[in-house]
Length: 324
Image (cartoon, rainbow, N blue to C red; front, side):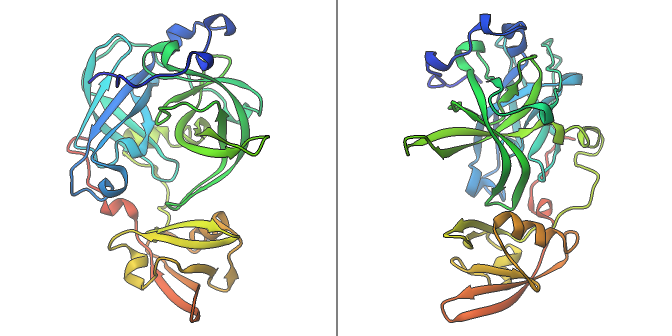
């Protein structure tokens, strides 16, 4: 595996070595390229594809931390290190709630690990680097532009996500590195934000590294976080004109089986009105663990209707790695 030829970063946003009080070149040696192959019949293939390319970062113990959507259901994983060597890996652990995943390399590679930092201390305007394989020329010098809640359409919620600009063109699994050369986040998404002149600017959203610390031991030992599993409905929702609207459904998922349709508006969970997408998720999760019945009131053209969705554990639908 090699880094794609079009993996370019404009020179204007490449980090300059002299701007940092640590050895940036040495630090970026901890970044790895990652490519995974997923079976065509896997549950996530329709939405994420059967070949996924991104980044990871070496942490203590030689494990590679990456973002879960790159490796979930993968039948093969290849890692490429800063010195050009490659090794196969396998999924050691995955946590859908945070989005973190661990990959165990199947060969011993002598590359530095990146120390975990304190993402809670990261503030707006802080200077950061979003790293990539290939060193400074493939990485991005950025600033934190926001710390705020993020609700994803796939039943995902971060209470305090990190948003940075300029955006990295290949953000998936890229390490977010603070001014002390420590890992404070992991690249997850590219989004659009409104600029001061009304134009749309691309920004990156990163998962705060502090969310990894309580579950890192569990991911190593068990392959998952040792906590109750949240109920999953199989809904893809977004806020449209102040309403939570169903944009899509997971094939064969609980919501589809219960009769939810694309275009339905989620009005209430039980007797409690839904305020926004994050509020919808919280009200569902407060009902109990995976398997709990979720009563919804939905709005349709013919009027409000009540439905009950029997939730499930999303992980039961996923193919498991061949090695663990």
